[in-house]
Length: 241
Image (tube, rainbow, N blue to C red):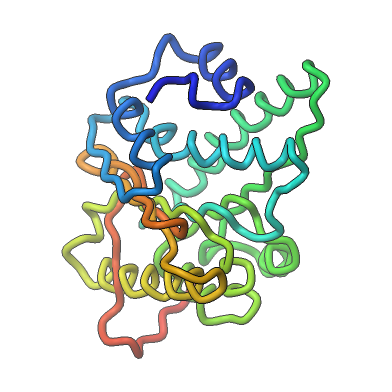
């Protein structure tokens, strides 16, 4: 899949920033665009973040230009590392700002695509704001995702999720955090499928040794790298980290 697939705003922004797509991106984009699960494993610097996110950004940009941005969250990015979550937010806000400037220069009204972080460090005021106006792209941890799924407002905001990206999946795959995350992802899939009918799509990914994400039928997905975690038996309560 080449850049011709993407909206001209996305394709032109990418060409202005990078010489060409990386192998991880060229191989990851088709699977994610088709709504299939995808696992991207590639060395640091291989463009795994954009391999996971660019199809999602393209979808949101197209929706924004058509005046159809969703009211709730469309993409969930899960990382086992809170510090990495903050880095991802910065790495998304920059490109989104540049794409919006490019749209304005072409006379296109592109609404802001909201990006929010929810971890144990998120202040109460920001949590309330996110409950009233969920970010289109939510960056969170396995534990905070679990907490969101236990609240009515959290479930309402997540009911329209289409892609889940799990980063550093290798760090979660063999432990209780990974088991806990797996359970949360099943709950999210059930939530999305129950609201929209049918099974939601999932996007999974894992970076470095980790990579990038995988989509199911239109529901959720996981990408870049971290490991996933799932709780023990479905009874544990896990607080925000």
